[in-house]
Amino acid sequence: MTKEKIILFSIFFCVSSLFGFIKDNGSVDHKNADISGYLNEISEEQEEKTQILKHILAKNCGTYVDLGTGGDSIAYLLENIPNHVPVTLIGSDIDQSILNSIPQRHPEILPYLDEKENETLHLKLVRMDATNMHPLHQSSIDGISASALTHEIFSYVPTKSSLDQFFIELIRVLKKDGIFVYRDPKWDDNPEQDCLVILKDYTAKLFTVLFLPRFLETKFSERKDYTGKCIKPNLYHKSYIKINFFFKGSEKTSKVKLDSFINTPLSEIDLTKNISIEAPRGLISEIQRHYILFLKNIFITDLVDKHFFEKDIISLEQLPLQEKIILKNFLNKRVETERLIDTSLPIFQKIFLEKKYFSSFVENGLWAKIIDKTALIHCCNTLFAKGIHKNLLVIENDKVWLDAKLAILLYQNFKSGIYACIDISESKVPLQVFEWLKREGEEFYFYKTTDNFVKYVGQLTLYYLKGTDKDGYLLCPLDAASITTVSRDLYRSIVKNHMDVINLDGKQQKIIFDKNIIHFKLMKKEDALAVYQEIIKQNPKSFPQLKEWVKHELM
View 1 (tube, rainbow, N blue to C red):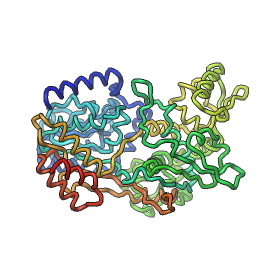
View 2 (view 1 turned 135 degrees about the vertical axis):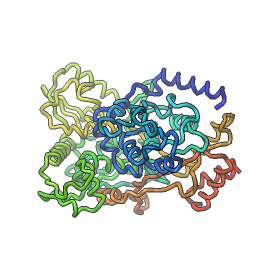
View 3 (view 1 turned 90 degrees about the vertical axis):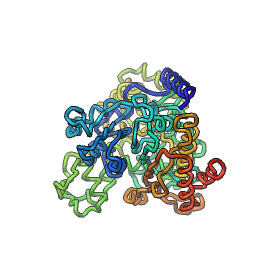
View 4 (view 1 turned 120 degrees about the vertical axis):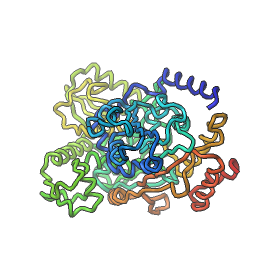
């Protein structure tokens, strides 16, 4: 970069850190509640997540960074790189507790952390914000891997320019011809198209009526910027979202906007009948994607064919391959050690009990004993001033009742806010559900379509490298074949059984669960132009924005 750009960029980061734009406290609070659970969650599909490996083996030397590492990817890479190869791996994360856990989870990596013991292939663990890679020198990195990271950056760095910051830092630290391997959920090509999602499955209804308010509501969000405002971008305007449901005892459907739905007690809604939501496709995709994660990590028994759990013994061999892998990973069985699983195992009994509590909680709300009535009344008055209807919260003698939606909206932990005024020890609260919805409901992902993303990366990097030693370079896919999609057929088939998605003309819509994997290279403009032209030639309908940019600005 030019001296002027570097100075401005440094000033921006100093000011940003001062005012809290960049949270640099060594942790990601909403994931700290269950670090081991979170790491187990991201531990699968290592071959898919470590495609930087082929670039390492092709070059047989250099320094490579695994951004947002959970440790499993590092262990996989070290296992597959020959010991004699002079390669330095850097595993980085914004959360120091995750980095601390890696040697405990993978003691086999310890020799690689000691440069004296292994002088060629070695590992460094570095706490680092992906939008401020200050531990890395300019043009010092041969390759960077970021699996399921880019879409989360907004959640951890609450500024509208956080994605820009990430790519500016990426191209700063990459060498010329350096590689960036991107892996993230494939975004819907028509995210703003209005559609209808019909919830058919009971668990899908229970999940959605709690997740949607927590995900969209901004008044009670924990994640704030330096001015105290919620950081969630207003991608899905609440006034456009409508929920269709039946009140108990009614044969006629009711249609309300989100704010009205939040103020409708779930105990009055008939959850045995279909519930549908009118919303943009992008938001519906978020509901579906989070629903699969919810089942995968909380109610695995609903992700694998439910009929198998009606038996005392499950035969893994009777399960389709993907279900078998998911179930084995859930049980931390990565090899063929058991073919039969007893459904009476404590881990399954815990799930069944949690699901029972979950159902009762949504249907009946939360009853709790009051331990500080004065403080509780103050909390209630604050809530009413924020627009919460009084029918969502009832005080009776020494007890208080909260509607399930409100209980989830207000939850940060059981020792703060309204929960500091009540005692839930005698309440059958689905604790895992509370923690999971808090964590996922506080994140708000930022997506681009494949077309827009490829254009954005090229456009941004070409501009920011002007006047630097990399002037005329930009970050471009290696070639047309380096943009690939990995299908998630199992998730698609499960969601199809639990939900229907149609457009407003009644046409069935495709459910998006695929992952995009793109291998980028920092290359000269003329080389990039040839790649872009080949991408457009092979996929003319899929890259209209890229085509316009190339035509008007690159040629």
